[in-house]
Amino acid sequence: MGMYGLSFKNLKRRKLRSALTMLGIIIGVATLVLLMGAGTGMKAYTKDKMESMAGDIAIYNSSGGAYSSGDYYLDSESITKIKNMSQLYNIKEETSFSSELNGTPIYVVGVFDWNQYKVNGTTGVVVDQTLVDKFDYKIGSKIVINDKEFTITGTTKQKTMQGLVLLDLDKALPLNDNRVSYIFASVNGDPDTVKNTVESQVSGTTAMTRSDYSKQIDDTMNGIMLFIGAIASIGLMVGVISVVNIMLVNVTERTREIGVLKAIGFTNREVLGSILMEAGLLGFIGTIAGLIIAAVLLQLAITFYGAQLGVEDITLMHMLPIWLVLAVVGGATLLSVLAGLYPAWRASRLNVVEALRYD
Amino acid sequence: MTDILEIKEVWKNYKMGAEEINALQGVNFKVEDGSFIAVMGPSGSGKSTLLHLAGILDLPTKGDVTLNGTNIKELSRKQQAQIRRTKIGFVFQRFNLLSQLTALENVMLPMRKPDREKAQKILDRVGLEGKYDRLPTQLSGGEEQRVAIARSLANDPILILADEPTGELDTANSRMIMELLTDLNKDGMSIIIVTHDPMAAEYAQKTVQMRDGIISHV
Image 1 (cartoon, rainbow over the protein chains, first blue to last red):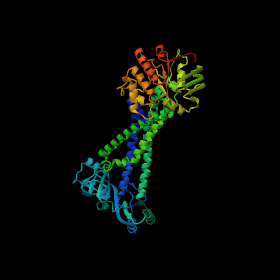
Image 2 (image 1 turned 180 degrees about the vertical axis):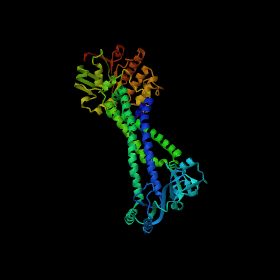
Image 3 (image 1 turned 90 degrees about the vertical axis):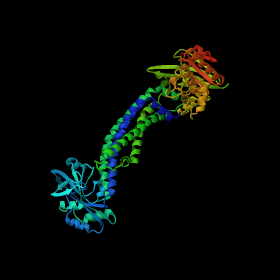
Image 4 (image 1 turned 135 degrees about the horizontal axis):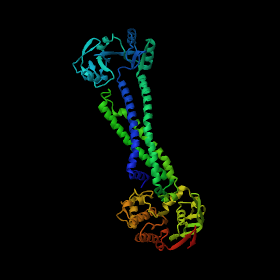
């Protein structure tokens, strides 16, 4: 009978106690993985989407921003300059502006690349689920934006705070006095060099490369994830403390048994090892269970809410990359082993003669 | 005959609360290879302490305990454990089997490399054929003690130390256990038992009386 088998049998002997202790770990791990998984997923998904972004560089009015509400536009002089730059090719414009529909504020985006959107029906004039819910729109319904009438050709499952209307770029531009929010372009040569050239030659503009975007997403998401990670870790810590507690109870309860093990020749180190193993097993099994629960919940969230959030093609691989799984399993197991350290040390230091007398 | 155990001018003091207890006060004692000795005496006479020293569960305050030619003071903790595992078999009054393990697993517990066949042979020898997979709770007291004896034999020890082996058993079972120990002794095993029970002591070749931490009568 090896140490491993003994530890395992000890857990099995007190099934309810072991299960309840694991529950603490399970809840902690599940919460952590759920939140971290959602964050990691959004980050990976956004980056994936960016890869399919048309062009290597996005140019916009410096007073605006990557996520501005669209009140700042590139003026026609800047547009002409940009279009004449030899380093840029495959130039595409995008326009977006706020408007209203039946007295409700909406956001209109002129789309040049419909591949970014999943549309039911055909592209051209597309409304989102929010507007469908509100006004009971169907394909063929008429809508009026900035005094111009359109016939809806398609819908998306996406839900937004405001209503969202997607129009073909050539339909949208005239509605916004031909003002352009973004210019996307492919570049000849190094994107960073071109970015600097654009910004210096066309005053009042900011250019963003893919790696700038990537960095921006990282900066934003890493901050958020650090925060939610810290909050979720509190749950896990509570679980780990309950491992310390229960292992102390186990060790005290088994005082005589530990005396017997020592009497028949187990070394202090072997006793220490078997208690640590037991604590580690509690943590490991709890972590795996927590991980599975989190994975199932994340998959359910994708299945039922993915479309509404506009991330229907996000996968579990986005949310639970191998590094996250390994870090959580390794980290939580290690913490549990550490939690067993004090109880194990106490057990290993027991005086054999006294332990054998223990009732 | 060589001595496998020699206890020379051994003192053992320990504190129990505020009270200083002199459990052994200059004990001299030799055990020849192949002997079967019963140590008797009232509670507190120091007989269990003597057994603990013989089994390196404890070290003397003063004096020398030489086991199989080695002074136990010179051993590291790890070496002490090693000798307990390989040279000594312990049998306790309250059996002290691990309740979560089957009879067979209890016997394999001290083995470095679990040897199922050997463990089964030992269980057969103590008369527990076919009860390999019983848990301690599924065995009678006498059977439990036989498993405990089987466990003490797992690593072919040179000395079996039994602390009140019949203390929790009825007369019939006590006789069975003592007969088993006698059989083992006939096969050459050295055995020391500590007992209150005169009937158990009768099985031994030699009885040692202890009183107030010294050997009063051999």
